[in-house]
Image (cartoon, rainbow, N blue to C red):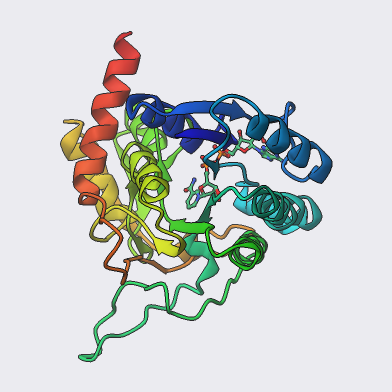
Length: 294
Ligand SMILES: NC(=O)c1ccc[n+]([C@@H]2O[C@H](COP(=O)([O-])OP(=O)(O)OC[C@H]3O[C@@H](n4cnc5c(N)ncnc54)[C@H](OP(=O)(O)O)[C@@H]3O)[C@@H](O)[C@H]2O)c1
């Protein structure tokens, strides 16, 4: 397939490029300042040009977003421009060009209150669960989702969560750095989610495009854990001796509220689940090791 990747210089964008190359796709990477996804004329002209070239254009993977969750609270217009308007521009221009768009979204579209199963136990959020964002970032991402899904039945929105990869600042990298600076860290026990390695997510989202899976899809590392439990597993797998003390979210107040419950799961039978989050962590640590050695 010949695929346009927007936001190709970001954390997920890098891994989508690598996964696409490995899968034998022809990829066209773009990012700021070459292409601003809020610029409808620029997006339209690019799609027209690519469609006219040999190989045409078979799909778009949008990894571009405003991802500064706390910054969005004070820069609402800027976050809205990228996450809502930009997603809508890409979606409508792609629909006009007859090209499917795969767009990435987030667990922040939910309110973080765990839904309960028939026995009263917390269960993962499914695609059919109602949304209720509690932050500007979450609201703008939800509006983006709605614009994408309304523009074409061929478009796909993939909600993921707790994403980390070797090409971006992320929680795992921060915890590894802190372990080199101190004997113990304090990490919250009252936020639970599904850590997702971008090295697992990237080939899986390309797989959705390859198989023509459209609509709303949940895709995260399998299982769930608190940030505290995740940190303990990071140090265990990396063979690092650093104590992980428990704390709670009220000790770490930030501009945007974090969802207390972020576990996502797909209820669709055409979606292949990602490996368990522990395997994602092992993959990340191996990839990070390889990068540091080269
Ligand atoms: N990271 C997470 O924990 C997480 C969790 C759930 C979902 N997600 C979603 O996953 C996707 C990928 O996230 P990521 O962590 O890979 O993000 P990222 O590293 O911040 O990459 C986003 C890329 O988009 C670019 N960009 C920003 N505004 C743009 C615009 N107007 N036009 C074109 N490109 C623009 C950024 O460029 P600059 O760097 O120059 O701004 C950057 O290269 C996003 O949709 C995000 O909402 C992330």
